Length: 196
Image (cartoon, rainbow, N blue to C red):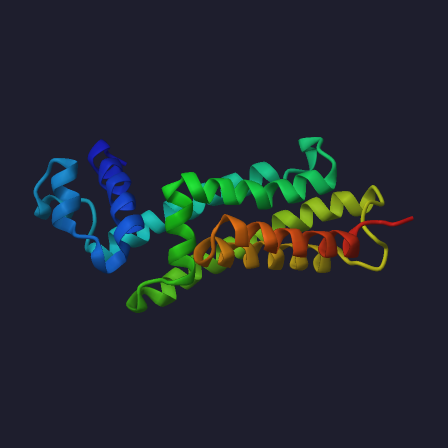
């Protein structure tokens, strides 16, 4: 990737995150990069191509964040590790344009790019579920998970809690997020932890 292409992606991310697909202007992106609009086409075939390249890069960075949190070898107690990702995502959403863009586009992609956007979103969810399963498998071997709860159930329920918090980040505010996590977390944790 050339320096110009990297700059285009970085600035395009900011424009897509703040203005959405429709509101982002290739002319404005080019001007901020310091090139003319036709020069963008030397790096990207179209606005759609640029959007999908940005979306794919951002999805990769979001997965890196999740992978860091859900490593079985992080040496945190399981509850702190799992809850930490939920709270960490809220903090990340508040400060990172990557996360804002990724969540908004995962829930509200441009209509004409629904299929490729959905493919990226589902790949992200599938990978997150795999990471959660790896963590729960390690916890299951250490008898930290209730024997009646499968690794798949624990991971699926965890991703469902995270997904509901994503919705709260998009639509709510800090107070609503706190209410949601305070209600959902104890019930989830009581359901999966080993109580012996």
